[in-house]
Image (cartoon, rainbow, N blue to C red):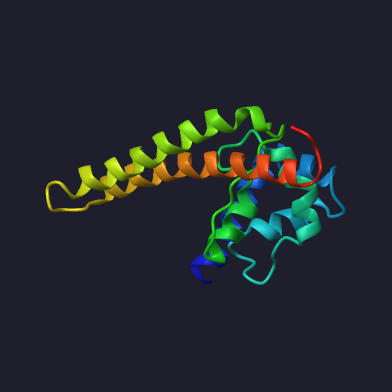
Length: 157
């Protein structure tokens, strides 16, 4: 099994756990608990969760760390990153605050690179720190995009 397929199996298991287990998950979707078990089983390398089942179950696993499990795994397999949009879009009144946050997070990211390279040895600890800073930067960018979408769709913010 490829690493991406293995990651999908693990993500499916995590989603099932986040719903409350196989039996609980079966109550919210069209397949039974044995099929849900197969979708997350490393012993069933040709059995993967259908997208409509993910759509049924993933929102219910929101409280489990790593959410949205399957969506995140698919995004990584496709070379991307999933960043959730805010549930309540910011308004144009928030733009100045978001600009300040964007600038601060960008500076934090640059500082992480400079600090990591200062000793001439970029290491995994440096990569983790930069990744965390970039995650924060992405959240701000997505919030700003939500403002742009909200205002471009004719809503007055």
